[in-house]
Length: 570
Image (cartoon, rainbow, N blue to C red; front, side, top):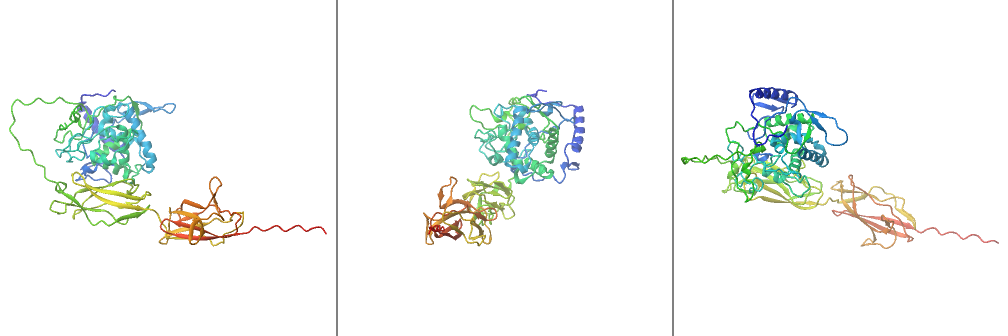
């Protein structure tokens, strides 16, 4: 069935009754582990949160579509070849072509970069359905850009979470508060660190379905979560929008799409109608926001992408009496004036090792008083592959009663040099605090041969044994340590010799100095085969490693035996 744009479907009593049956059936069959409780539907092992942590989720816990899938499972039609399967049955099983392509490409990309996550594209489809009705039924262009902006309501605390502006209106056009943006409904502060370029155009745009789908997949795959595990799957979905009803709705669509789906032309997908904010006592129409000249005002879009623009009401004929706007109580975050270092020691680690020290930041008022219960975001900045525990480059921590937020442990990557960890207050525009961290190269402080066999050779021949060494650091095997090996002129002259033993390069040419060597996982280093020219004598091979470990090995070359003269005839 073609998408119905410009109006919402009005459901009658019969439909309501069917929906009630659907909820019960889906709870039992399509969302494993979901139960009904006195507090509402929730998943096993999950409890409703009194503090939704809206500004620390993907969507800011913005409203979402609550429609459930039909009870009848979609029936895929067998196809030949490698094309996308088509199908018949319920129209809800149809996913717009470009949107479906974006989900599948995101699954493939995450399958390579994070294979342990086991992200199914059907999960992205389920979230995309609940967040924006598959980009408003697939209203995207050929490149995946939404035809018109998809914006959630203003998160000003009036019936929704309160998140003050974090992007200067760059993504959502609002310079006062944040709004969820795009087909996967990211709030600007989350998109800032989780955004991805899914279509290779060099941009990270939350209004592009390819970028948004890949970002959503990356967001769901953080913390080492394995989405084939039910517990991790629930954690990931709840981190996207912290509502057990949201969890159950997404799980229902996930199971529905897993049973089969089919591709439909862009712009013809079905639109959902029920929304989680329909009965919360607030208007679902967004507040007008500033726009640039010549652009479509974001306020002309329905929150979450459902429906279309409604005519503006006519101005009243009489002037209403002045009213005092309600005041919103100040939150702890509102009182933060600046950040202070809370005794962080020097941050240095060897490549591949964990940093011994952790970053600690304190939030303070203008008077220097510590502020508790404030979210501090730590972001790794710079050209580095170092990460926090769990493999992420961003971590958010709530300050304790002393106003201190301690970041997770840092793990050094293989890239050496300096990088920065920046601490900022979530939902508050105060200057960030930068911490310098340094990654040093892997090193060894000792080298030793693994055998004691004398290394000898006849002039013009080759050494029978290869030189093998073990590198250690503070007594433990030193893996991945870089080393050089040079045949030197003398113990006090490290210049490469021009005679005596030698190595061969890939072309078989004589070389007497090797660089770029590296110890293996057990700290072992086996040098290439050695050869001897026609010069007899004792020679020296010196091996040096990063960190200062040095070993000099003796090589003995004996003269080739001379041939005896043949006896003459008497």
